[in-house]
Length: 211
Figure 1 (cartoon, helix red, strand yellow):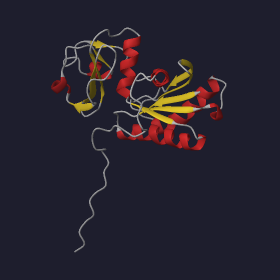
Figure 2 (cartoon, rainbow, N blue to C red):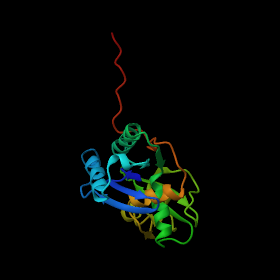
Figure 3 (spheres, rainbow, N blue to C red):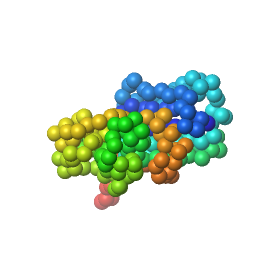
Figure 4 (cartoon, rainbow, N blue to C red):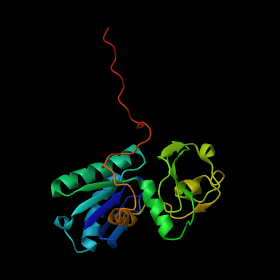
């Protein structure tokens, strides 16, 4: 069984799948509580599926781009569980998860963009071809600097309609779709390392000179 979760958006999403069949999926109802909610959600999907941790044969995790704190929670949890259970851990760009879902549910049928909320009045974004294959590397910019008339998947289009007038679903990554992406190898599988794209808000102060 594949345990999958993504913490790149304000809401945590967790799923358990067997191949492409999603056995259980949960999404937190409280935003920005990644550290408190990820472990209970994992326990919940295992219970929903009638499984135990030892049934997990692989782990998939969204690697962002996303806020520093949320990504850290997901990636540390994925690496720790992978080590404890002795199973492989696969990372997937969270924008790619949205892209595959958008294609498969019929929200897009040609080239499109994915844009998610990067805070600070910016978006994380990448463009995709008609097969949901990423054309460029993920980046972070002000919406006005990457304004597009393409269909735009993700929360960024809802937040900045002047720059992205053609918003289409879905809005946030789904752990169930992450599981399908990994099972079918629909996107590049990465090491479980974070895609921050910019420095974290909290950085260590330089040491003061001793006089």
